[in-house]
Image (cartoon, rainbow, N blue to C red; front, side, top):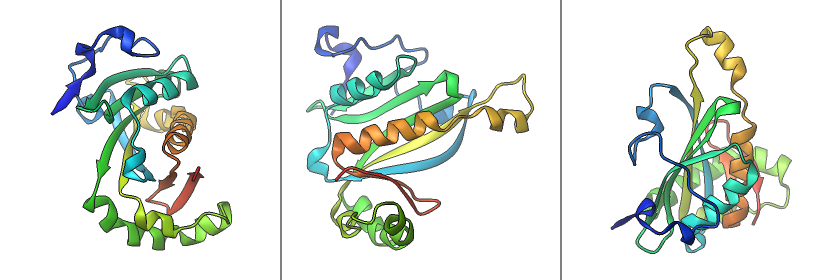
Length: 191
């Protein structure tokens, strides 16, 4: 059972939730103002899956201009999905929780891809931890498309700083590791 947090009393959240500009559970994929760029992972022990209210509080505290929309929790209040919009950065992120076999099955290939970057960026990072992580946030990064600008100019407007800041916050919250699976890069480790 999914829990729609907008049906809960507002006093249960540490910061007020914004009005939702489009229907609940609408993926940013469905919003024609955004184009998907890439997907990043935050891997962690599923037992450390945070409450949605903790994620909202942590990300909301990062930047007052971040707009947090479509918050969805499971029946225990733990995060399922959340969209973060950073209009100033021409960016949006869909955060989606995944756990279990899918995460564990992909781990060996991911470890192989991360060996070089992990050793360079985080020499103390035990790559073998990834083999045991059974929880993961897929962070889908989107670019806002502005009709006024040519595609080349629009690419220059996308600022990845919001993405990097959110990945770091999620890694800290879960005591996990943020990675770019496409480039095989460890971005942040908080274990």
